[in-house]
Length: 177
Image (cartoon, rainbow, N blue to C red; front, side):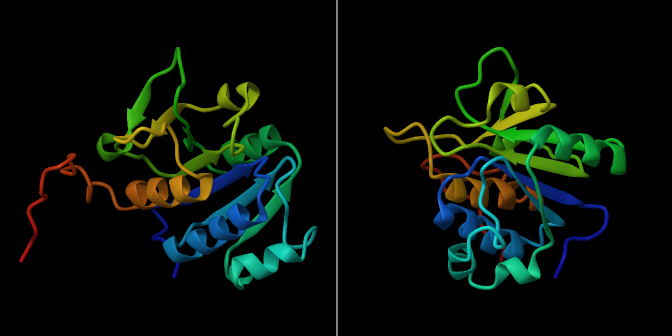
C-alpha cells in the first residue's frame, strides 16, 4: 500500500555503511508506503551487494528504489520533477540553521527526508541543499540513535502528523476510546 498521492514521501539514504541499516531502511520504507527510496554515495544496493537482499527480507522488490552516486543530482532531479518539494534533513547537532523537533514539526508534502552516514551524519554539501532539519528529542544520556531506528521514528512522525503532537516526556497522552 502506497501513501496517498498528496503525501508524496521520498527518502535519500546517503553514505550508509551498514548493510543491516540499509536493509532495515528498505523494510521500514515498505511498511510506511514510502513513494521512492534513493540510495547514494557508497550506500550499497541490492544489485551491488546480494547480502542486502537477505537483510531487507524482500522489501527491495516492493519498494521503488533508485541508485545515484551523487546525492546532489538526486536532489536536483527531485526538485525538477516535483516543484515545491521540501528537502528535510534528519540530523542533530546542527548549528546555524533552524532545527525542528519532530513531535512539533508540521511537514509539507511532497517531502524528501535525507539520511546521512552513521557516525558523521549528513555531509556539509548535502546539508546545504536541505530546506529544513528535524531531530528526534533525546531524553537519555546518548545524543543519537542508530540511523535506521531514527529513520523509522522520523518517517512515522512525518507521515502521521499530527498524530504525535501531544507526546511529552513522562506524561500520558489521552487515549481515544
